[in-house]
Image (cartoon, rainbow, N blue to C red):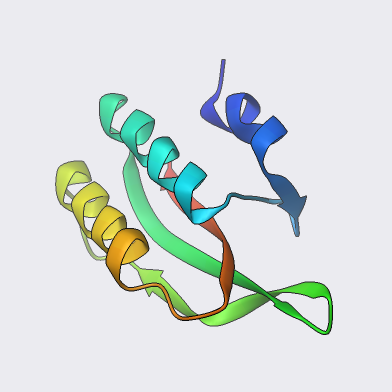
Length: 95
């Protein structure tokens, strides 16, 4: 089973991406680490006028080639540095 399929019930599909709450995103990251998947980016989503919109403050990890480092940076970003108003997080993965 793909991770996306497993987490789809807890998230929202928007623009072809799986949007997860920050708490669910941190659980998702644990499984990404176990599977040694490289995170290329973290996209942020917020509500604007009661609609979900992508926040331009996304995290670009495309220059990192060590999955452990990408997981560590993404986890720290989500747990400590999310901009106020961030409702959802999505990932760009190297699968």
